Image (spheres, rainbow, N blue to C red):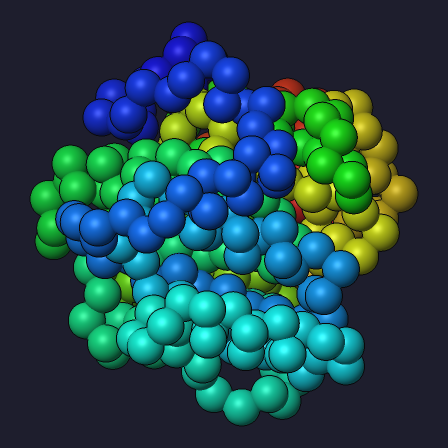
Length: 346
């Protein structure tokens, strides 16, 4: 790992990337996908894809799945109420893959991205998969994406819940490079996970112990699936593995559900514009959901959650005490200062 990666995550046993890998285009990925079928070897990964009106960008993502150097995967997909040609594109791709490579899960009713992804997670876990990987409909995976995650997760004892995540290459709607996502400067963990999500969903891969933990949980309505994964696994004493190398072309466009800021200043400005209301709503829901599922947490995490929940029901003095005792910090001091103000006053 490079000098900006957190030491607490440990050294990742990852494949060496080619120097020019971060410049791969969808056309290059397509040429890799067209090289002919590879012999599936190693652990079969369940790729979890939730779609909703994704037709404009979906084909590039699907082709990048075919270009993976770790080609032993099965696609679990669910359409969340699309009104465009997304379902037709998925049906065509399923036919192209052949028998046993694609599983359509659930109905087509609209339940939202977070619940849709967790529905897919439970289906893949019930089918016995050892590793699952979230996939967004509008991104493009670099060819080593699955291979890096599999290598990292298989280096961890199988019984320990583990989340792998990585950096991304931020690109515009036409896949022109904008920036590289922020490195993780402070070691991920709990209870800091309550203040900020550092595990971007399109890069997350989970081992079976982590998938079992999440399958047994009840996330709050306002929390996205990737943040809930990070929160619960960290709170349960699991391992968070952060790969400092980009593995995804993370497309930024007008239809992004979340998206990413290109600079820390832009992220802080965006937070100020949104104000404390939306964030504190999610924060309170996350604390309440964890407080109601204490059996999934470590004793230390239970104590932290109980203290923060009590502080939220109390006044500013108690909240300042909670900040001091629980080490509630974000990735930068500017973001941490903003969170402290919101926590004490919100």
